[in-house]
Image (cartoon, rainbow, N blue to C red):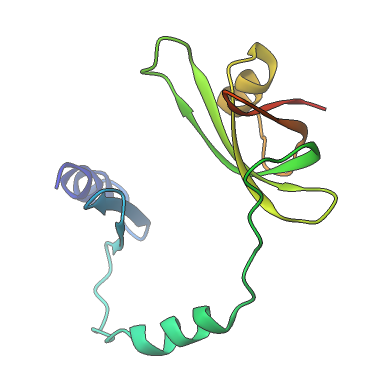
Amino acid sequence: MHGIAETVSEMRQRPGQFGLVGANGGIMSKYSVGVYSTEPADWVPDNSAALCDEVKRLPEVPVTINPDGPAMIETYSVRYDWPTRTGIIMGRLDDDNSRFLATSEDENPVALLSDGEPLGASIAVRSTEAGNRATLA
């Protein structure tokens, strides 16, 4: 509700603009998105069943549990509330385009995730007993 209330407040100061609010629920298992505008629009019912069917027809992306080698960042997050600022990276291995999950506490990749434009950046990933770790390539 806070995000919606803040967006409405901001939208009132910006006629003709749009606002986007994302939210999650459950255990990060449910996601919702609201698009807000200062201009009224007619209600359009969703077509969730058709969208779900379309998504089911997309090819599955293989997942590598223990990745090793050159890769690229597909998406990411940064944890600031852990004792050490930590980057969490979902990427694709260059060799087979499979998806993996890795973390990094190294200063350079975490700085790229926090302050740069990391999407598509080249990294190296390796599997260790403590988990998958990523460094800049």
